Image (cartoon, rainbow, N blue to C red; front, side, top):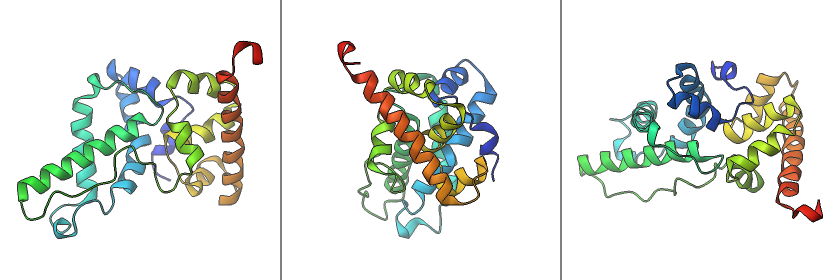
Length: 200
């Protein structure tokens, strides 16, 4: 697996972001290792076909990431999936800039940056839109290994194959089941946190 595995942990991305904004280079590297692989997968094929010989997806992602990082001090995440959306938005803006500069093709209509990954289901997307405060509180109620699976799937947007490799599952289906159980527990805790005090 890539070096991303060594940085995953169960620390939320916003906690890493706070450290990065305070100058912690390890936290910054952790954010990149966690966020860039799924963003790179998402960005594949986003460039207009007429421009793919001139521009490479990896280069595009690196440029967008560099621009996003330059504005990192001004970034204020509002929900769990905000970092991914922030990077995707940067990529879309970069593509539009490139299209305008080349003037060979019309401005493309892209998926909105808030669209969920096609590899993730509706419930996972809903969790990604949770506020950090409630998400963190619910996450803290999980066992460490459950937290690892949730962070990998929701914040890292790892595939089940990647989760299986990272956490020692013998097969991908085993990783899928373990992750689904952890997410179900998280969702139950989130629901409980939403319940009126008298109804708990």
